[in-house]
Length: 225
Image 1 (cartoon, rainbow, N blue to C red):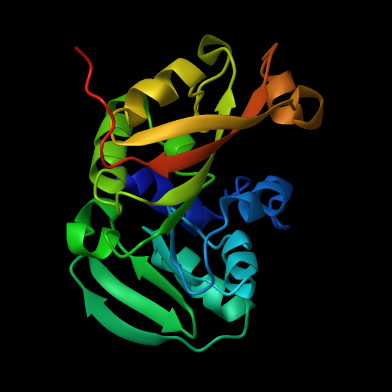
Image 2: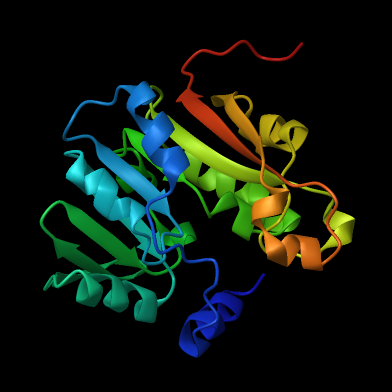
C-alpha cells in the first residue's frame, strides 16, 4: 500500500478510522503491563489518536510516528499545544512536553531510536498494512526494540474475502508467525464486535473479532530445530 493512499485520506477527511474517544481496551489492559512511569512508548502510525494523550497522562514519554503532516498538525492544534519543530532522518519531529511525533515514514526510523522505546502500543498499525508489508514492518520495528520491551497489540480477525481492507484481518496464526522469534504474543482478550460495526455488516462480513495481545520481547527464546 503506497503512502499516498493514507496521505490522500487525511487530506480529504476520509478518516473514519480515527476514534473520538480513548480506546477502552487500552485503558483496560495497559496497566497490566506494569511499565514504570517515564518509559518511552512507541505509537506507530499514530494519526492524531487520543490514546497518546491518555498514555502521556499516565506519566509516559510518547513517541508517535505518522506519515501525514496534516494529521500531526491537527493533533497539536486540537490539544492547544505549540510544538517545537526539529529535523529527523525521515522528516520533521514535533515535540511538546512528554509527547513527540515524528512526521515521516516509520521505515526511516533508526535502530538506535527504536531501542529507546521500552513500550509499544499498536492499535492501528499492523491492521493498516497489507500482507506484503506486515513482515517488513514487524521486522523493522519490533526486532529493534529493547529485548525486555512490553506492549499491547490490537488486531481484527474476520474473513478477509468478505471485505477488502484496510483495516485488514490479521488472524492469530499470522500474528504468532510474524512476531516469532523476538517476541511472545499472548492473547489477553478476544471480543465479538460484529454488532458494533455497521461498516463490516453492510459489506457482508459474517464474523468479526477484535484481539488484544500482550507483547513481550525475548532476549533468549529457543530457536526452532
